Length: 253
Image 1 (cartoon, rainbow, N blue to C red):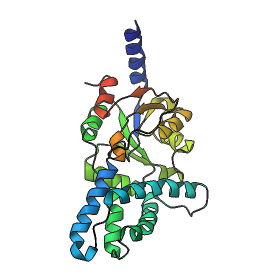
Image 2: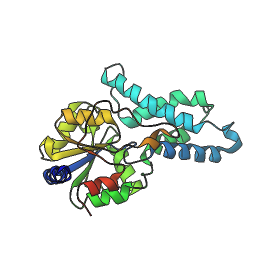
Image 3: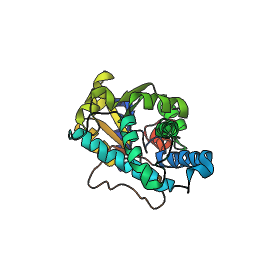
Image 4: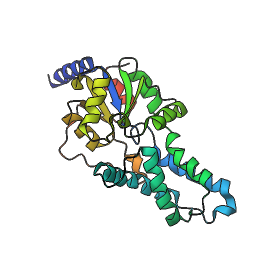
């Protein structure tokens, strides 16, 4: 009886949803390995002129951590409004001296900053999205700016129907207007949209805005020993280990 009830609930949920919106960094793409790889390639290009090799895993982690803290400063009005490309560059320029890269030429700095446009998808992402797209409208819903998200989709072969960014609303997630605004632009009620993310805070905010939620844990996002983010007492509509499993749970063959 419990199994039948679960199947009925899942079938009702799958039928009611019209669109899936996706967090991108860490959920769909592996930012950490991508940034480390870009840094190592940069070091090889520089050769002896680049000095001692930088600790690229540490730099990648510091860059990502700086993104969250700097975004919060913008939200509080402590920094001028800026898009994610601008924030990434601000943080990068602060970090380079710490990692022995303060002499990095401007062209290389800009190329490295745009590494966020060239992130590689997780192994399951493209196939999983392609299955999900058979039934649902698929859109990004990221703090990444529009140019970044479009370039990333082109580079990684991500099959979006639509690219939506918090930039469109002049806010950053987890502001509720980002989630409600996405549903509005898609001409859907919030409850017809399912937010898909690897980050519980993102999903909790989406729930508060009336969206359905799918949690895709990505423990590898934070590297070896990074572990999973705490979920606390949050309960999501679906929990799946990857996007292929999400498609299966939603009844897509």
